[in-house]
Image 1 (tube, rainbow, N blue to C red):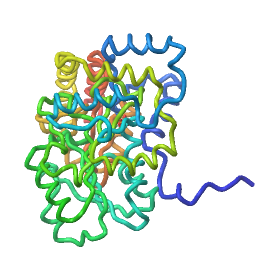
Image 2: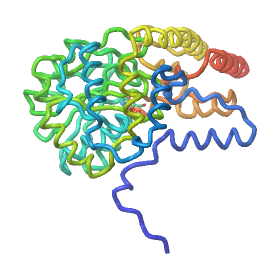
Image 3: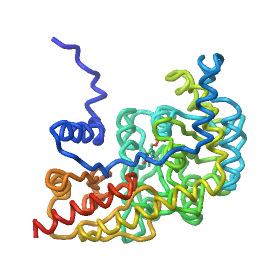
Length: 390
Ligand SMILES: Cc1ncc(COP(=O)(O)O)c(C=O)c1O
């Protein structure tokens, strides 16, 4: 008789990509050359000085011990300067920035720190699946708020206000939005901040995509009165091609950060010092570094748009971020089966939109994290698949 896992895990499934990557791995082992256009893991390199710094610092005998729970001062200072330079937000590096081991863990820490069992959490549909799974894990109640293409994929605050919001503790927002690629705007953020004040809700903006194919950097924290009611997560994963390094941060009022640290300091024991030092250098990359990365993404986006065209999917050309989100044609009955068929017949994996919520059901998402030649090969395979199935 095996020991039973806790009831808690019954409320969540293994992460969709965790299962899918295993399936792709098995197909590859069996000799099928699968092109994975599913996940947003940047394949370009971090800046040269970032890598060099990691190497230099790793060679020092003093680099290998436990580190502070709040990150080294130099990293917090670099985050503060980055926020000032690009988002025009002043943050006190001593107490308004908390480095994280990637921003994903921040979603857990924030939820642990602020959501009591039975309290409600507003979660975007479609949206990053972690907001809902973590809410379930902390026994919060998910209240999906619908995002609609016709409404420009922004929350309908008026209709939310018609409902009872008295038990809502947190609202997750994520602009630039994944998966739809929608930019945020100052007026949207102003409306959200006054909504949060009015209803005493902690508003959390998850902001890892600002630097990808986007030049209008907007932080929720730039809005007057934001620090009273808002937190922002950010990350080097996408912006600096450092997804595997696991470096992110949460910024906001020092009181909020103290609560988050109460959770986090009981969970991990700091971040490897050379990673922190190197991240400090990455945050000081010149603006041209981001431009160079984006020139590559721009060329890739053109090919991905062509793939969307071949699949007869409708998409918004103004999207930002690491993906293209497209609406599948009406005659496709089941998007999940369609994607599965493309995987099995064309050997190209693209993400079905339903994993981001019910509102994503008629959409697919294609990642820009593959080289041009791979994308061209994917395009050819999909073209053959379509012509064979017409
Ligand atoms: C919307 C969103 N938030 C957070 C994350 C997690 O990023 P990190 O690597 O910083 O944990 C992702 C990663 O895909 C994401 O798409």
